Length: 312
Image 1 (tube, rainbow, N blue to C red):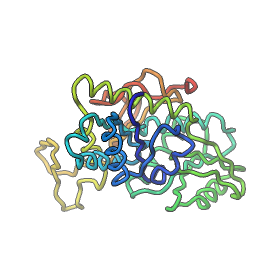
Image 2 (cartoon, rainbow, N blue to C red):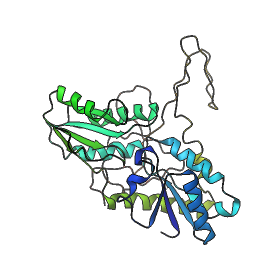
Image 3 (cartoon, rainbow, N blue to C red):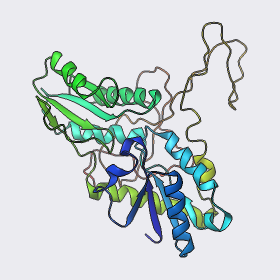
């Protein structure tokens, strides 16, 4: 990789602090905002190309949009040669990586999918992720713990024990999940990714972003600005409320509410291969049965939906 790679962290990585030890020393780690602007300006002043990677694992689309808005504040000379990569991962990857960790855990253990608390919608998405891990795994008990939120780690362990599990294995669903030392009946099932696997994913994100910029001049910023468009309250305003368009082309002859929650992807069969040649699958949140068809995302990197092969 040429130029400077800047990894931007949010609540999943404690403002990028938890990325230390995961990413190599050649990768600059920042919390966004002024730190990001300072690093980009420093690199561009020295003539370096810059690639910025939002280090979300799929639960923080606001990090992607905020990063794009920060880059818009740069002047033309600073933005020239600066590209914004696709997010490090989607929830499809996260589910796959968690499922891979779960295959190493004995069947009689409970799984406690754990991450730092974010906003209510990010927290709700963690419950959705845990449900998919349980649905396509072999463990009867899969619960959620939110560090700094509710249910917390102690409550999550208590629930697992109350359901009859002799031991509880913490599966980290974020970068900032420490080992649960001193918590009775609890083991650590991480890390989520090895350093080499994380480096492989990051390199793919950077390469794809630089290739896109060289081919078409697309720096990735415009697309990223809309990353958190569906991240928030549903459109319904109660039983006698009204519907908002928000830019969507809904044309119905009757009145009902539209719910647009997260648009993160799930894969029914993701696994641990961060460098494989696969495509994202992203279903809607509507109830459904059976397998969901693959949906190809505009501009998404097509190389990193995990499979059941070991990470390279």
